[in-house]
Every structure is written in C-alpha cells, then in structure tokens.
Length: 207
Image 1 (cartoon, rainbow, N blue to C red):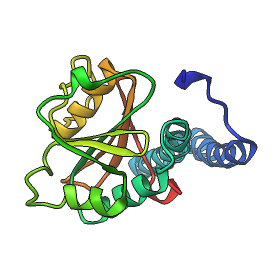
Image 2: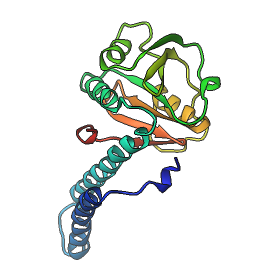
Image 3: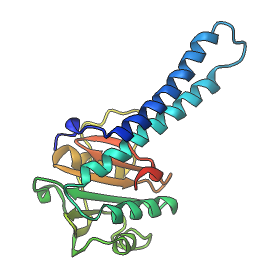
C-alpha cells in the first residue's frame, strides 16, 4: 500500500479541519496583536505547538489503523497492548510484516509462533523478561519471534535525540515493507515507523 494514496473519511476530514481552524485562529490572533502586545508571546507559540502536536497525533492515529487493517485482524490487541505499556512506561518494539518478506533484516530472535494476543505481548515486554529489550515480529495474526535485533536507522536526520528502540523502528522500516510500533520506556510515548519515517500517535485515538 502506498502510504501517500490513502484518503481520509469525511468524519476525520471534519475533525482535522476543526483542529486546523483552531490553529489558524491562534495564528491570526498573534498576527493581529504582535505589534501591540507588550507581553512575551512564547506562551502563544507553546499553545500553537500543542495544537499542532494534537493535530499531528490525531491524523497519525487514524493512519496507523488504516495501514495495519489489511495485514492483521488483531489491531485491537496491538492497540490495547501499546496503550497499557505506555501507561506503565514499559518499552516495546513491535514489527508487523506487510507485503514483502522481512526475515533477512531480523536477527537473533527466539521463535514464538503463537497467536497474537494482548496477554502474550504484555508478558514479552514486561521488565525483567529476557526478551523485553528486543523486537517482536508479527506476521498477520501470529507472533513469529521475540527478542529480535532490528537494523538501526541509516538516514534519520531529525533534531530529536532518539533512543535505540526508535532508531531500530526507523531502520527496519527503511529496509523492509513493515510497520513498526514503538513505546518509549522514558516517556511512554507511542509512535510508529513506516517507510523510514516516525510518527507520534495519540493513545486516546487508537480505537
């Protein structure tokens, strides 16, 4: 699936338009008052930044489900898992195979070959589990392996200082046709990587 060819349904278009109008209103207000405002406008910029991050995450949450729908029937289990891991600041790295084989880019994992489930994924990434630092590989509705090593990003030029999991998520998605979910152990932030790019996800919008 070409990620640039996926359209937005009417309800999502309406939601995003409303958020964009709110952001535009903030910008217009600053443009009107910037020459007459004696106060620091950094707070205004912070409010705009918050609005934009919400807008970005809302769109990413929709696209995450749309990208995964053709490749697994267990989206709800994946969403519940990463939400719960996020709440508890348990790091996670989960690659979902799409059209092409990716096994040549995934190394040193332990075979699991079990039906994808919330309970099993949570157990794998529970701190102290020997497999929790590696990546999980999913093919359709099966957990193929865990404790995998994924290739690190080669072309990431972002300003953000990314950790090992995020670089591995970007790196695998650069080389293979897959989507990689990642949960930050430090912040609990949920993101996904596809085609070498990383997108933050709004947890409340995953279902």
